[in-house]
Length: 225
Image (cartoon, rainbow, N blue to C red):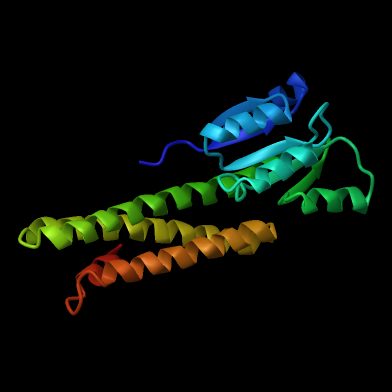
């Protein structure tokens, strides 16, 4: 079962963190505070996050340096980063944000609805990826179990049917999300992530269908989902 996604909020000013929590509370996800770049990196050592909202101007390690550390780590390099800044030094400053690995760059004061919508897209993508990992784990169990216990055909067929139905639900949600991104002219990073998710779903579906060669059992279940 997929739990709530974690969203990392990084800002040295408590009032800014409080404002972010108020804006994002409607998403009903787990919001984690960090008051410095060092604290953010520490949180990223143990927890997985759907997206990071990172203030640019912080004492000590600023947002650009923090992002550079995040992108150097294999565990965290793919986490989307949205930079938040109260200053605007023109295109060069914005380019530095994207060069540091940000998927978006938002100047304060920002529109709460826009920020919430952008974060929501990355939360949805994260949740779909978590569901996909669950289906892949089940498929691996089925493949490993099939090698050692061929006799229990009914149990095997039941697991295949359950896995196929759950995969079909993720496929339907992913398709709806992709259509939403196309309609809203979303960030290129979000669109690319959604496309990667769809490719992984296609591969998993093919592997599932291959478990019953010639019978069409898994395919027929999928067509009903």
